[in-house]
Length: 197
Image (cartoon, rainbow, N blue to C red; front, side, top):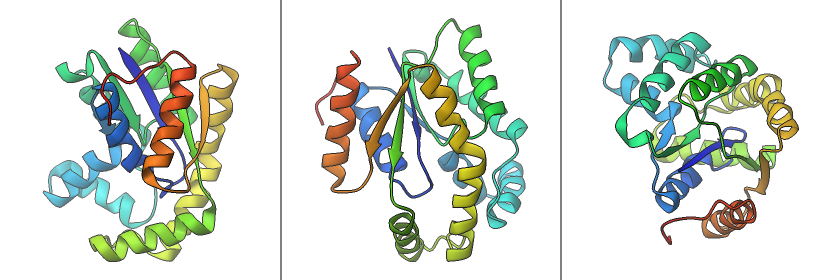
């Protein structure tokens, strides 16, 4: 049973690495961004609520995000472990996740911090916006999201570092090389992949 959290600025490659690590450890990747985008695309009530925040380059409120994550982690496939991508983003969400895991008698095994140069991240996200037609990824919105990340999410790194959970990985370079760096760092902590990718 492996419970991982990926942290890093928007565009650092969390989504790509999350799917690879989920496969390697045979656990579901739980991405709040994917859940939000699915609902926005399908114009659900949740999607319409979320879209207003995303279009403004703001994060979705904690109460809404916490409820979605709690529901997702309660599903059967997450009982044997999971990989969180995009949650928690704030210290309040950290506390809520901790309460949720404690009530289930579990805890996080490691926090993978993927780092990347800001200019490189902006370039990646602008390219992705062009390829995928994502209207939420304009240069101004991206830079605003980076500011919000620095203000709200970076303090999480201090919280998890103080608990000895953080593994810092350089997110630049070939996708395979980044995956290998993560798997090696986790193996050093006794967390071994169950599937070779």
